Image (cartoon, helix red, strand yellow):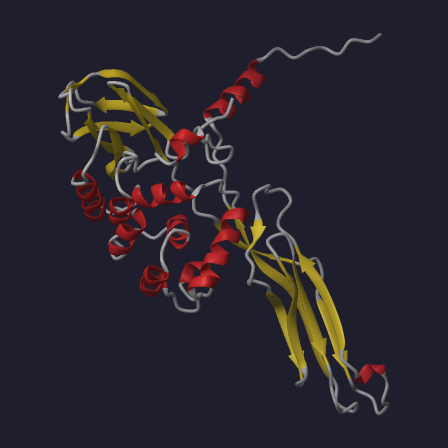
Length: 357
C-alpha cells in the first residue's frame, strides 16, 4: 500500500488532482481562478517568503516570464551561477528546473507545484491569497484551501454552497491521514466561510484532509516539506594531465594533445546526482599558454572533464594537470513510519535456524 511520503508519494485519484490544496469549485470562471493564482501571490509576496530551493523550483515552473525576471533579482548571490541564483534567463531556468525536478525524482503535477507555493506563502501573502478566494462568486459545491500555516499547524478555509433549496448543510463524512484535528465547524451555513484547524504529525510526509458536506466532497493535501539538498565536491580517481612542445622536432608532440576522466555520483547514495554546470578541475596547475579545460559530458549521472595543450612553437613546452571534480547534490530521504514499523518488526522477529538435510 502506498505511503504518504517524499518518494513514492501518494497521488490521489484524478478526480482530486485539480482540487489539491487550493481547491476551488468547478463553477468558478477561468478568469476568477487566474485572479487567485498562487504563483501570482508568491510573486507579490517575494520579499517576505523564505526562498528554499524547492520553493524556487515550484515558482520557476509555474511563473510567467515577467514574474520570474522581476523575482530572480532578489536571488542574486556573489559568485553564484545557475538555477537557484537567478543568473539564468527565463527559458534556461524553465529547462534547468525541469531537469532538476527529474534528477530529484519529484513526481509533482502542475497543481502540486502551485499547491506547494500556496502553502509556503508568508503570513501576509497567505492572508491576501485567502481573502481573494473568500470573495469569489460561487455556485453549489464545497471549496477548501489552506488559509494559513504556522509550522505544522494548518488552518483550512472551507465554504459550502448548497443549491437554491439548501440554506444549511450537514457534515456527512470527515477523514484525515497523518494529521490531528484541533477544531472544525459544527454547523454549515450557505456561503459562510468556516475554518478547520489541523496539525500535521510529520513534516516529511504528506497529510490529507477530506470532508463531505451535504454530498459535496473535497480533499486538501498538505504537502511534505522537501528537505534541502546537501552539497559536496566529488572528485575523479586520478589526476589528468597533458603537455605539448618542448623539442625542436615538428612531430605529434607539438600538436593538440588531450587527457580526460569522468566524475560520478556516490553509488552508496541512491538519490545522489551531479549538478550540471559544476564540472571543474581541483588541484589544477599549468605552465605556459595554449592550455585549457573542456567539459565533454555534463549530465546528472556523469560529468567528464578534458584538459588540452597545444603549442605553435615546438621549442616551447606547455602543460596542464588537475583532478576532475563536480558538485554532488544529495537529498536525505526520511524513513517513513511504515518502513520504521517493518524495520522494528524484522528486528524483533525470531530468527530461523538453518536446518541440514
